[in-house]
Length: 254
Image (cartoon, rainbow, N blue to C red; front, side, top):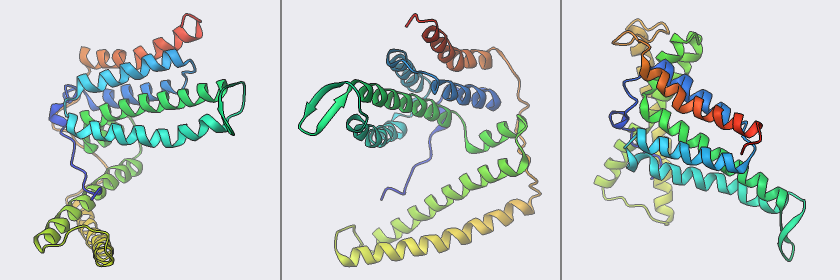
């Protein structure tokens, strides 16, 4: 049952105490800068650095290692066909299957770039909750409507996940197991339909509860955000290192 995603453990991230605004700026800017890499050597170095940054800053390995594996598989689904579709100077062929120098370079760039951006995104997700993301975005000047839509959308997705877990436990308690039989598929279809109805009802009640408590699009934090040397160090460790690689690449040193 792949719909049951556990919530990431933010307490295991060493970045959790840093101002949410700087976390958002640092990781979003770093992910944006990765898109400007063109050299496979610098991209490979950036990818390794991003993975090391994820492993060092967030120790919740059981949560993000499987997701990195799924992300890698998803990227390969698009990359592998490109090896045989892009024409150019051939370097390997087997019948009608041909890999060119251009296709190898393009596929490598797409794969390494996607892996680096995914590692940076997971490091960001592991360091902050969706509420803190919304609060940081609001403090940076993002509109109330967009911020509220983002936060409430994430909360509703989590509500669906919790409802799915409850219904799955209830089905297991009744002795139902997953199989390839028609009866099992019929039960799964009814489960999905009930899940949709129950989730919509619960999210509607959650929305009214939030409004009844005076929510107007603001996201107050328990403590006033303060910029210290840690925020500057995070910016340098993410966007600064990534931009340095671009400068070295443009100068022709790499």
